[in-house]
Length: 213
Image 1 (tube, rainbow, N blue to C red):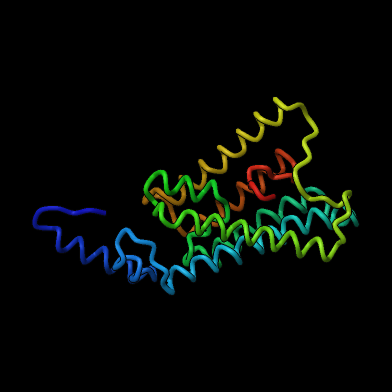
Image 2 (tube, one colour; image 1 turned 90 degrees about the vertical axis):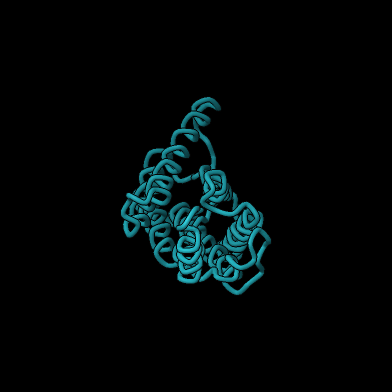
């Protein structure tokens, strides 16, 4: 948020104050360089844990439903939605709760997130997802019939169109609640979680709009 003229000093102080309130004072002081500071490390750890618990809960629900049949398809959709909502409210104030490279790249593209932190965020998300997948494999043996990933049942064109629609729907909601100052920020977790729930109900629990699911 750049200021000019007589307001430059005031706006600069406001920027620094906001940076301090958000726990990224060191990032503010470092300028354009990648600040390997405590707040930055906290963000990376939050992304790892958030993505881990999201994938563990969502894919775990799919695996249990395929092996035991006790959760049901609507139950799986609810688990995905609740997992996203809970993690957004848990670590959103630390890292922004991206949990998805598409979200990180989208925010960076519209200048809501520094490009210099994108690689670290994406690696953290992939690491969290990989660890969660490994945990589920150890717990359930990795049998093919329990595979919780994407298995399209329609044609290639149907799958492409559906994935485009639900991914656009997700990013539309995230962009609306997270990048517009007129939105009610406290409801962001609820809105994004409900969108994930609806997407699962619409498209099935393969969740290709999450690259690692």
